[in-house]
Amino acid sequence: MNQNKQMAELLFPNVTLTIKDLEERFPRRKEGTVVTRFAPSPTGFLHIGGVYTALMNAKLAHQAGGVFMLRIEDTDKKREVANSKGIICNVFNRLGVTIDEGVISETEQRGEYGSYIQSERIDIYHTVAKHLVETGYAYPCFCSEEELNEIRAKQEELHVAPGYYREYAKYRNVSYEEAKEKLAEKGSFVLRFRVPDEINERVGVTDLIKGYIEMENNINDFVLLKENGIPTYHFAHCCDDHFMGTTIVMRGDEWVASLPIHVQLFTSCGFTLPSYAHVAPVMKLDGESRRKLSKRKDPESNAEFYLEEGYPIKALYVYLYTLINSNFEEWYLANKDRDLDEFEMTFDAMSISGALYDITKLNNISSEIIYTTSVLDNVNNQLAWAKEFDLDLYNRLTSDLEFTKRLFATQGPDSSEHRKDLNCYKDFLHVFGSLYADIFELNNDAYAELIEENLPKEYRSEIVEAFITYFTEREAGSEKTLKDLSKELGYTDKKKYAKNPELYRGVITQFYKGLRLLLTHQEHGIAMDDIISVLGYEEVIRRLKLEL
Ligand code: GLU
Image 1 (cartoon, rainbow, N blue to C red):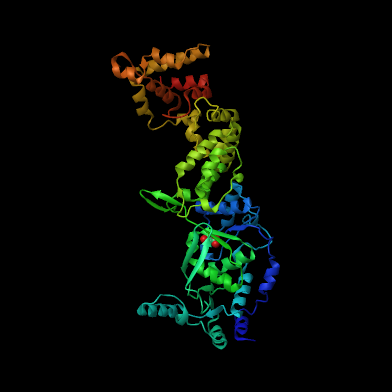
Image 2: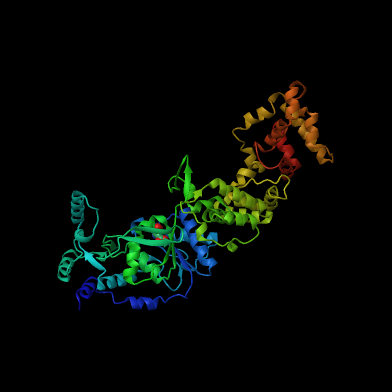
């Protein structure tokens, strides 16, 4: 047995599988199949930037009839949060993203290339690791923390680059005998990659988004397996994406700097390098400067936020696709009735520098979508949202579904004022709350001041009485309009009022706002005619009388 083989046996005595066995267990996929994956860590939080990257991956695979996988990268057990898989899968489920393979719920997986959870793939990593030791591409390192510090100190003194490389790589040439002794003494080892003596100074990769990237090659004998036998990201990425047959590795661009390591790994393992597409992070304007959307500072960085707010799923897609592909918006505006799946996503229309996240834009898209959604669909969406996030509201909505429908009928292209008051379904009570008697009763802090501004105390009763008479006569068939009434009561338009204020009681907007305040206690809201018809004669009169 040669030294490398002996070493491999020493380090991995229990590994009996070979690379060939793994190639048989995970057969090659059909030539030309596009395979992408999203590979989050289970930290209990799915960043909207992650959803953005996942949608790109899913879309690229699906538009080519390929496979989209969800892999869980749980090698850092310290950061793991219970039920993360459930949270992540729930978001994708709700978005309607098909996970063709991989983790599909907290407890389930599908697909032939699993497990799709890294902590369940240790046998695979160790098989490849053993192979790398046998072929001379990996070796055990027994350095203690102090020894590593000593190396660093020496490098500082000599003003050379820090790291574990060449003559500073203490165990790079460790012999079988020495390794055996050290292992007996220490009981564990770190497995390092042995960077070949002869490597090019620079390495280049053509990134599907960023184009050709050239950089200095890696000289560090980086870690493959940590002391506990768990792989580093780099090693797991190489093993997983090879055996799972990933053809496009699309991931955050914080990994660009690791490309030289990944090229070395794939090459030394004898694996074909996948195509890479590095995605710049989603940014936010903070004053004048751009920064990453922050988990701590920005609630909108959490994917679950959008479910909790009740944004229509389509709005999220439209918005994220707009960020992903610069030509999407134009396509969407020209093809509003077509399925979003029909849009062809392309790499050359992806942002190199990082898309700018702007929730106002999402709100515009979303309010437009709610606006064009039918009353019935809106009611159903509202019910589904309330059932999940606000049971009191759900009970309120279902206890008088006809009323709920009447409320939604005040929105949309068929409504009297074409209003788009809802950005998301969480806005429901904000928009319609005051039309419910109990919420109306709660009043509004600003009300006293507002009513005084628009209907001063001195003549308020007179106006309210006039309103009561007006609505009662209308109920009896009178055709008089509010505008007629306003004139009778001495209101006029701004111009006329400005010229001769002594001739009038006030401006017509005060008259309408006064009525709105009397009926809803709110300054803004749905169309006046809708308020009146939704409330009905009796409730209108009841509300008006409260002011007498
Ligand atoms: N688990 C890695 C991360 O969270 C995934 C990177 C990749 O997609 O390869 O950044």
